[in-house]
Length: 99
Image 1 (cartoon, rainbow, N blue to C red):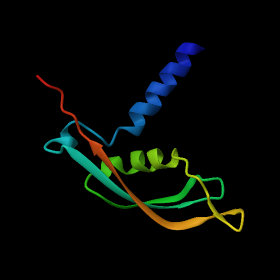
Image 2 (tube, rainbow, N blue to C red; image 1 turned 90 degrees about the vertical axis):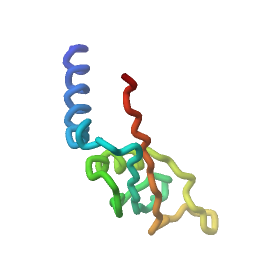
Image 3 (cartoon, rainbow, N blue to C red; image 1 turned 60 degrees about the horizontal axis):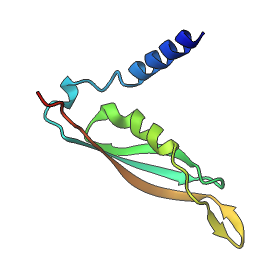
Image 4 (cartoon, rainbow, N blue to C red; image 1 turned 45 degrees about the vertical axis):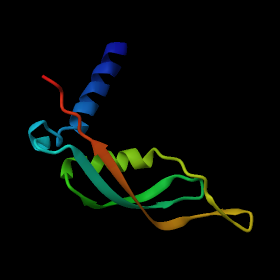
């Protein structure tokens, strides 16, 4: 059973990275992804959309990474409220293996 879980995790990871290949990163040392999003009443990023990127292979990864962030909810009159129209840029440094 443990082997199946590990194998499944490896398959999911490989599938999620399938659009990011060594060849597609040739000549790139940094990938930037600009995202728009809202923050719900619990502080979770929602309605995440990619606004701009210099590498389409990172679109899903950036959305996944942002969705794992946690914010302190905005408070108005002692109540948590939804924040809308926020933006952020995620930068990924591409490290090339040394020969």
